Image (tube, rainbow, N blue to C red; front, side, top):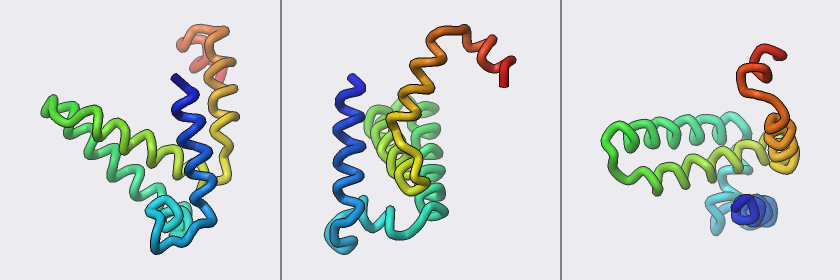
Length: 101
């Protein structure tokens, strides 16, 4: 399953240097981190609404995941590092992880 996300990350990275007039991803990334964060927050709000209304959830979840990945790329955070962190967290309970912060 994470292969799909890794493929999406590769597409996002590839489109980073494409013509921003022809690529939504490129236009987002070229607009800077703050704009990407704003868009991610907007999409999360739409996901919350979809969940509450029990309508269009998959579409809004996909939008939110995409915008999280774009925002990570804008912040120069490698998705592979996020995956490593998730893998590390499998070794302890969520409660223990939270208490160790």
